[in-house]
Length: 116
Image (tube, rainbow, N blue to C red; front, side):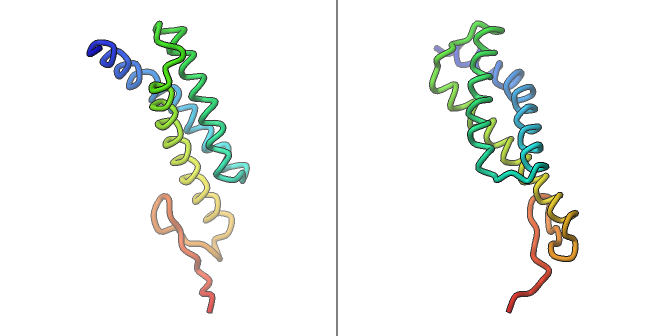
């Protein structure tokens, strides 16, 4: 059991995070750049989680139908996708409407117009 967990964790760090996480980052960026709603990240992340499970199964002889590994990988994919979405959405919003919004950090902004 110990070596199986170490084997999965190594695959997770060396395959899922760089490759599938990179795809999740590009997914979040594409959704933000097309002004889609943030909830679209969830179904695409679920699909990328399935792709991750299949590729781990095909390339590394991992378990195809492991629910815990699917949930773990999909949660990481979802976090990366949401982070990329927020990063690019704030960037586009501040650049598109500089008279309304001001960037405060990389992922936050404030409204310049004071509403009474």
